[in-house]
Image 1: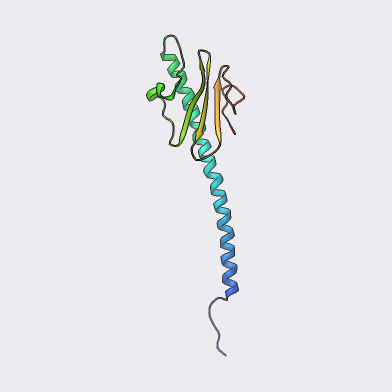
Image 2 (image 1 turned 180 degrees about the vertical axis):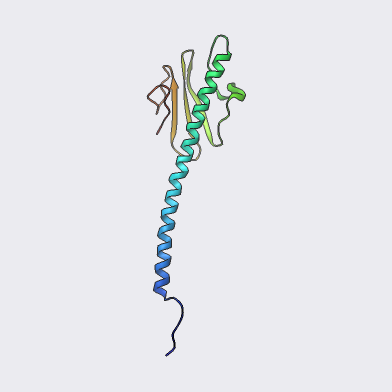
Length: 128
């Protein structure tokens, strides 16, 4: 009697199913990691925008905050895909909202009376 070498069809199907399950888990995890990356970019840009606003205000006579990102000039440039919007600007404060074109999450921070959702605490970045 001769012995046949190789795998049976059932063994091959089991291996394919296991690889498919592992791939599905990896793809789902990758999407979560990508979203966290976009949120991290928005948070970083908000910190930079706040510092640029403060530097801009200190350079003005009398002190005043910039109303657009363009007014900040070389002091601030947002990351690729991130849009920064000053939602409220007054002599006593400002609100900043960050969005990313690859996610529906938004992040915001404000200083002074310029409460900007989703931020609820002055100076603390919050995302939804």
